[in-house]
Amino acid sequence: MRGPAAACLLIVALNGAAAQAPDEIRVEAGAAEVRQAGNRSRAAALMGVTWRRINERVVTTASGSVTAARDSIDTAQGLLAMRYQFAKRPSWRVESGVAGAVFGLKSLADDGNGAAFTRVQRARGMSGVWAGAATSVTNRTGDNFRSSAYDVGVWGEYRRTSGTIAAVQTRSLDTDLLSASSLPSRRPFGAYIVRDATVTVQQTFSAFDVAAIGTIRAGEGVTTKVNDRAFQLAAAFYLSPVVALTVSGGRQLANPLRALPDAKFLSASVRVLFLRRDPAVLQIDRYGTIAMLRQDPDGGATLTLRVLANSAARVEAYGSFSGWQPVPMRWVLDAWELQVHLPPGPQRVAVRINGSQWRAPANLTKVTDEFGGEAGLVVVP
Amino acid sequence: MTLRRFFLISLASGTAATGVHAQVARLDASADLGLRRAVEREVVAARAIGLPEGLLIAKANEGIAKRATPKRITDAVAALGKRLQVARDQLAPNPSEDEIAAGADALYVGVPAPILKKMRAAWPHRSLALPLGVLTELVAKGLPAARAAQVVTDLMARGATNVQLYALAQSVQGDVAAGWAPEAALDLRARGVMSLLPPAPAASAFTSPRRP
Image (tube, rainbow over the protein chains, first blue to last red):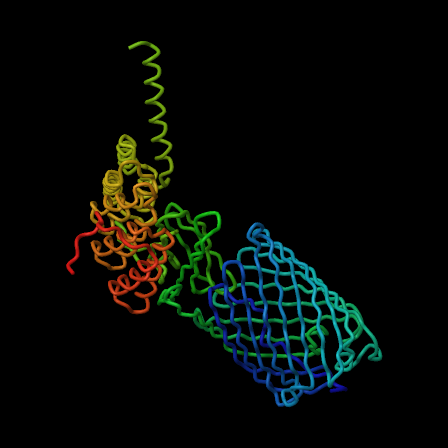
């Protein structure tokens, strides 16, 4: 395909930013209005699935999505990523993955993109830094165009606000992407370089989350201007702990690495979270609380408690690990979470929401105490 | 009494009193004076017979956190003191603090005291903290204490490891969550573990004779 570049929209987010549970599936479906630079608006249907599994030190994420518009912006794409945490240096992680996409579903064999990336992360408390590199090949009607990128960034979190700052330099030979801009800054020939600075801020309010993404770009014209900027806004409204209505809109700058053209969009979708109901490992009952135990190599175990409650709730845990003093749980993406190290032997834990009764996590054996309360029994090997 | 001996006794009793006060100082600050004194009495009594008094403070703090009345807290602390003593005696000769705590937990959910002695006999030189925890979990899940104890002690006597006992409890928990009857799940999983162990000795002192 020559002329207008095939569009590859990333509206169904492949961010993999799902919550951490042993097996988790998110399904998202909705619709979008898309206007690629220099073209008229198109309506598109969206469908996406994200699966995530956490093992001892490996987090595996796989996702796939389809954007259907009976047009060249028809896209199917997939992502497989793994993150490894070092046993001896738990603050260090390596994340690698591959992504693929085909454009224009009517001609699957014609156009596509394949990308691979690696990142090294260093976490320190609620913040961290990363550095990474990525490479990709975009095929358009038999011609291959290579792209490569280097990125560095920092992230941080304070109470209910989280944010990232990233800098990316991308070098690409995908000159068809230049043609996709309504006002390319130069003739589409040879390699070009773009440099982006992106700031993302996410804030959690009662019953909904809001995220804002701003990008400033310097470099040659894969977008309408040599030096350009773009802004996106996204929000998720929680109808229940596992169902959310998401809306997002704004402008996405062209991304040569993933073959994404410059486009404006507005989308709405429903997102549903499924947790695998493995009776041996976890359950969710009416309280939406689960407990997961992972043996530590140096003795004892790490207990992870997750509570699916409203983000505005006050969620606490306590037990023999805290001398029965309430410990506030932390909001992690879409659920309340607490990780504690437990010594070997029998331990008891319970959680409560908004100062109500203490409850045992659903998948633990319930025991009542001398004070009329209940707790979950954990035997740490 | 020489002056030196008097000095040493004074020093020792002063150190003991300081230790009790240090323990009671860990009591939640919101405890009133009456509760504080009642807990202190229990701590002194526990210390006198060599029981881990930190568990009593933790129990009192648990009651305070759960907004129980002072009387209920005092009763619970006293009851725990008695369970700790029974557990210590049944797990003799040299139970660790973890074993005593696990034994007291087992007694709390309804495990008869003599079973602790049988378990000690099965594992005289290994820590019973985990087997007692497994037994507590099984009984709390609704299994009859005698049956659960028999299975656990049989497995221990046959040489089961902590890992195997832990896996047994996890499997039973999973089966019960999936809808199995607890006893059926225990029997099935116990047979699975048993099949991995060496043959039983000719006569076991820990199991009652079975009819053919």
